[in-house]
Image (cartoon, rainbow, N blue to C red; front, side, top):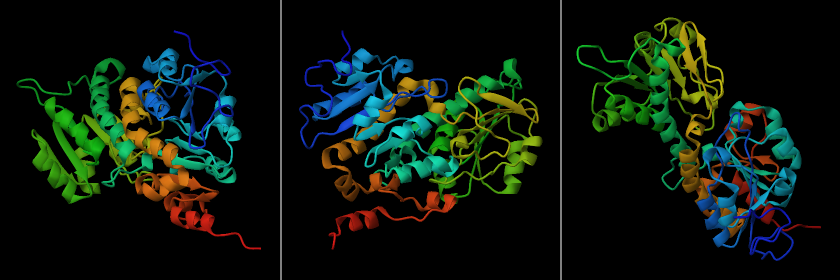
Length: 404
């Protein structure tokens, strides 16, 4: 099967400027730096939904090579495959990616474009936010988009994956090969079970706890909200202990842990260092920390970001796994899950136009970080000392008639 490329005939697939209806949108899917990111923003099935609806989708060559989704599959789904990053960005109304924009991509963005990706601006460099504001790009952070139940729609899917993987990762590194304690994360008769301590009872924490309990581990989960802990006591079965996440309880729990899972999330904000360096010093030699919160800065004081190619380091005798994009290690599953979560919001923008989509879809509006030159997220604006405007204020001002 031949791959339709930029400038080549591709049936109904044409570059913008030829036969494009007024209500069609051009949507570009960019390629990631494969050394740190293996997912792609939409699978071929997601692309087919958009092209069937009359929109034009452009995919950068081999964007999904590590998911084993081929250029030919994207072409068969109606996309045009291009080898040229600049061409895709310049011709797209909406740009989709996984990781935040690079400096090269920021330079190419145009005023009025819509950018979708994970952004984590509260922990990123100021220059990214400044560039998005200067160019009047509408930037939507996957980690902030909500559904009708006020849940973090896209992030929840990734959190479920990360929660499961955190236990698999911990089990692997507990083995003695990389300096772990040589402990089985589970149980056998007459041998004490491994001790797993989970800090944070959200989606990551709950998912990790369920899997660890199923494996036979002794699980302690700590959180600041009693209601979350009470719910887990009723829904999970096994050797489970719950406790309020205060200094005394955290110190005691981490000191006896074989594994600590950091699963703290404060929406849009930098994660606080709940687990201090002094607590880490008191942990067992060869124990393992998996800091899932590292994409928000990390909830363990001794954490620092690592990569899928070089994921662990040892500090105070404790193995630290601090990969910000843990779900990328199962890139195909994560891409398919992301597609189902993200597609309704992209479809709304493509079908209704940005302004109308923001008016109708409040969950999408809550995902905005920048809009028409304004920072729309109060937490991010405060972190960088920018003035903020709500989406409603900006839309209202845009609708005001111009007076002479």
